[in-house]
Length: 401
Image 1: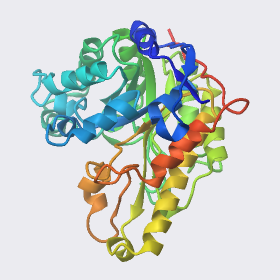
Image 2: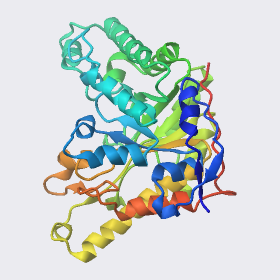
Image 3: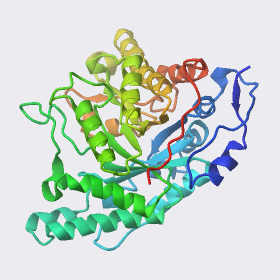
């Protein structure tokens, strides 16, 4: 018989939500076959929290209940897709609009789910008053630093004791495709105006506001190490975090986003596990934070030709499986989060990625009609048929003082 965590785990989780060193609950017999169980219950066998980003507007739709039903049944942790970003929280300077973020937190509480807070410092989705003020010089460098400190402190304190993991700094470095020479550098708005010191500041301010939350650095294209050269983004992030922790900066985790495309070939589960282990050797936890696998929308796919569709479906499932097995194989990978689970509401569908020539989409593990795809089944099988000695209980991460 397969086993699942007893329902009492949610009482334990609620009691420890301010500590987040969540111990495994006593397992009870689950008479359902693995295929009948949820991603949520199968993942908790390993102490792994399986999550998704949530489109709050979709979750509120009463005429489309399946979206909310799937969130509640399949996932043990959720991330706000947009409602905790700065432009949503403070559209006017000094005037916070908490309603949507609070509603998201209530959704998590109703579903007995842990929360990944996303995101405190990012160069995108900033309010216009901030970017325009900096551009015109009406906001000075010193004032900008104080604005950032106030924002981090205000948001983290509001949800203190209720957020398990915070993405404190997001995408602070370049990708090899960003510059002609391919060299990895610090980049974008915050670095340009505050220098690299803002990263250490952000983590220290977040720790002061909530001593118990796990604080993550989050980035994309860090699923595997390269050659260790100046063009190796994963090595750059590894070195950056190592140096910051040596200085006492309270970084508790590294989030590997996991945005993949079948256009670029398949990832290797061993490669991903080894990468996560190398990050974990720094003394931090890890997580897959924004997993999705998009595919080119070819004419054959549009026409529903079986050769094209089947190839895409199999390639997508293989990539999701590699990400999940890589996380399972690294003991300090605490959570695995999808960046949306269905094709209808997926960000790759509703942005330019899903439109026009060279479009890529169909990235969810459910299709637009909420029918599970092969990727869903592959993930369930990975969770069901993984176990000791190669997969063991998680090693909890304690916040760095």
